[in-house]
Length: 176
Image (cartoon, rainbow, N blue to C red; front, side, top):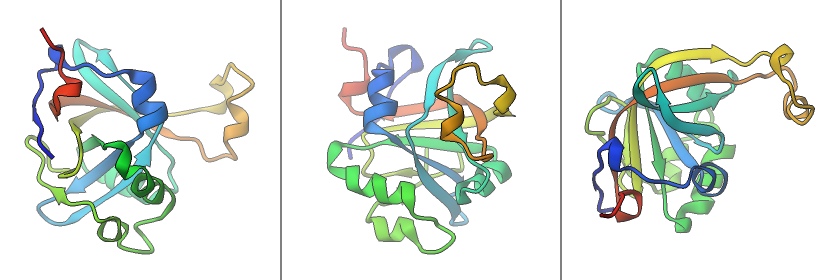
């Protein structure tokens, strides 16, 4: 898909639409050595922290992608057109431990511009990140009653990544 570089100051996206409806494909690892995995994510955030543009993603320790995001310093987030919704559902429910889910998906991993983790050729938006912080969610810090039912002792780890490159179609670039 055709993408152009987007400076963070010109990047626009509806955050609730992006995470809750479009989803994203989180990839971590090393494209050059073919050691990477991906998973669909629908919880996260984009913003500014420590004077840097950042993306925050959550990964449960039992996910296969956890091994890669722990081992490698970078991750990417790719957003796809609606026509790839079924593919994202499959990538979010199948494990790369058991099958070559990326090969089965029909998506084409390609080298990112600034990080070792791959992006995907079919993505309309690719955000490249370098890890800068992580922390584990702790149930004793949950303040709202609707949170705990989402867990069975398998709390996410949060990763904050400094956004080092963004490329996308015109939809994601501020016009004018």
